[in-house]
Image (cartoon, rainbow, N blue to C red; front, side, top):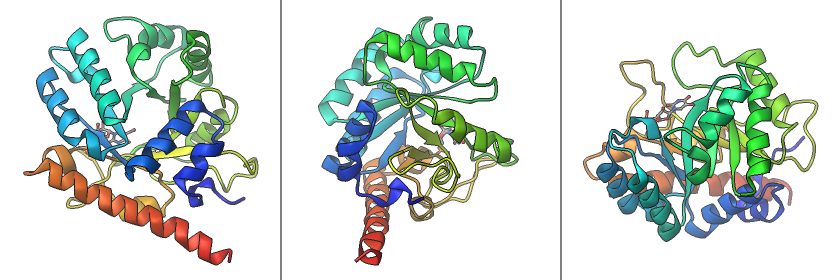
Length: 276
Ligand code: 5BU
């Protein structure tokens, strides 16, 4: 079964089954970027400043909102305003992992009210299918069509146990929730080789652990480059320290954008010429 990853973003934007998937691919195509900035800054001022400076070059801004020491309405209002101004989506890397009932409360309510402002969230299937069922229910009942889930099918850290059967079942569960599951956080494309793959399914692959100058860190992080990630079927490259901690973050984001976009164009062209 051919994977959708060989189709241009513009084409995927037209036929993606999920409204948020369509918007995501439209943004990537319009801005010519597949970069997701992992903005792991720890106060509102720094977070909004980096979102404003790098916003024109990214498709999505990924947050860890619970590390923002002065989180409050100004954080959410600022992020929402910048997302509109610079045309990017907000992805809260919450990694939900609990029973469905608890996860619904964590998603909708509490201090963070993630469902109100984050277009995308992620969750692990470790607790079983109920967690995805719960998030799916909140999304469908919430009446905001532009909300989606990425299933955490793999992790980049050394010794990760998110492999094998866990990864396989992540794909199986994703197929059951087309109204809310957009795709995966994974190191590579996962779904097209499975016997249950269908012609029109289009799971979006977000890949963390992308860095152009480092192989990893002292705490188990393992990196690949934008080129290897895109060649492996990734659609969106998530980079954090490689960009925001660079001496010149604007030059850095431009480099990641160029590398990611050129690798994407090569991937699409290769298949185009092979089928001619
Ligand atoms: P870095 O600075 O590019 O290493 O940041 C990586 C970000 O992606 C950071 O926010 C992590 O929490 C996140 N991440 C990851 O590194 N690996 C994973 O498997 C997943 C998320 Br899922």
